[in-house]
Length: 568
Image (cartoon, rainbow, N blue to C red; front, top):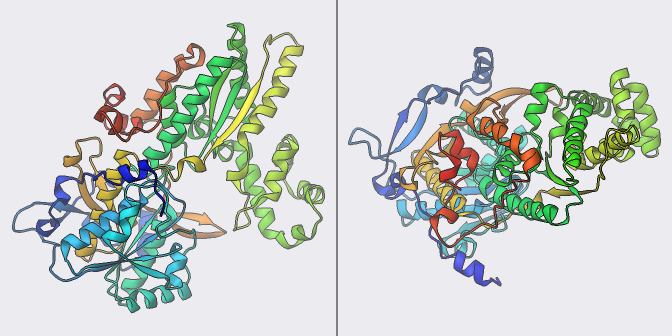
């Protein structure tokens, strides 16, 4: 493997785990009350209890805490040799390799004869029994590196009786004590299903989840953030800062920047806090205010006009990737399209291209949604009809929402100019920042956090816990004070309609409009509209003063009562 001087130097960084995870041989565990409770309403809880009869009772026991609690607490550091499997699932996120490193180090610490087996290619690698032994030597080149290339990944699922039975056969054939699934909400939902299945068939293999996603949509009162979020956001913040500097230099373009975040706007809000753009749209706020597409365009147009009156014909506008699904009339349109596509997919496939499909769908759509569809630019109409995900639904992540807003703004401003209400020039550029952030070398925060999650997962494996997520809390405190624990996966579960059936899923967490982070953002953005008060985040700093290298996300600091001025 060819490595750069950066890779060589970065690999030498030793992550810092919390004090409670330092000596795993002396580590103790205990059950503790989940505060605050995340339990679903009584009806949902009852339904989950029926779906998960063997593991739902864990939600009543509470979370598992690790630390030094005295002789009465259970010591998980058993002398026997543990054999733990690990699999990466879903899209990459900075820090995944450090989770594996933490597991390998912890298992070796618990028992010199302990082993770690990695499955190549994600969950599909389990079904194919495509496994490799992981050791300190094999993990060494990947320490503190981005990507998931040590093992590879996929979005395949183990969700049918046949796949579950095959998975059991492979895991037991390898004589695994535990399987650690590193992934997002869908992957951890899969972990909960697999844990329930294995208990139900009498298997001794336990299943543990680790929270991963750059989108940040798994954070809740018990999971403060996911690994990878900080690193990805810092990459995007640097690029937005560079665009802001270019904006201020040329003073002739509005830069529309679409940011990753299909289901929530955590990335957009955090990047906005770090860079202070002219405008940052928050999808959850659009939904709460029931803003139409026209209302959003008008809102942006008013800012453009006001700035033009100041002689400013430039700015930076951040757009969350998933905002289109939060706009009421677009949400209705997408829902109808998905239903029609599902019911008539064979006939639609027989039609020759966009024009025939469009004509057919217009006849099937309700009057209001047909009107909405007709008013969209042709390119967006094509994306809604021709781009579909593996389930046949509209592929929302491929819809170029920033271009949609630009096209509608051009039309709106041309009308305003013709009628004497706008005296500016509207030049524009568009950008999409997505894959650029998924495989960055993790920040110190993510390197430390992911490594600690790996050690926590190993500690859970040693307790024979199953159906738990490895969690590290108190992240706004000094690293030594971070708290390692296991949270029942079912405590985060809800029921949703997917594909016409009710399915258990780990609920995605949206931006809390009443939370301190959004409230701070909402207050600060008032001055950003006119002041050109752009903030220059700069690149991720891996070496240097702690104020640069070890800062935490602003939204995380604000969420826990901190001041952003002490972190930035």
